Length: 162
Image (cartoon, rainbow, N blue to C red; front, side):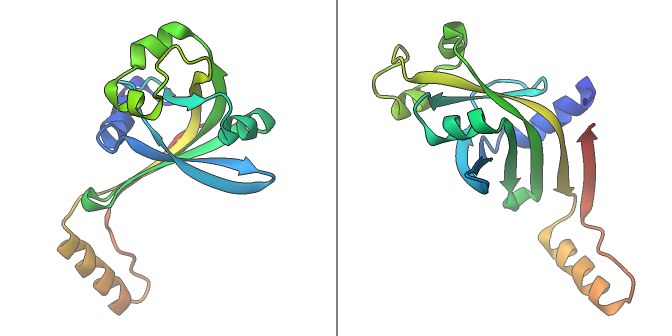
């Protein structure tokens, strides 16, 4: 598991991105779809609204292992997280995380019995963050192509979790 400081760092990377791609297994084949973060902080668990009747729910009931990816190409941020998904029917959580954005996707309101929360407990992951401008990155790539055995230094890369 990650330290509290590292969890804060991960949150700083993904909180402004807001939308991650959730990858599940659909009959053994990976399938991705966008999911919108609703929480205000990260403690090792990510929360999303979903419909109980959604295909992703059936897929996660068959195999709880999922992957979430977040990317912000403009700022050179990429995060991949792997964890276990499950439904959480706590109506207090629905109330806590309900907002106008969510309401637009669930027109029958927060009392709709098909609404539930998907809870994803993160086991491990990896993140990349470019620390320089696009111009510097292109320079590093060109330098790597000219110098045999040289790899571009584009920024930070770190694995976390187990």
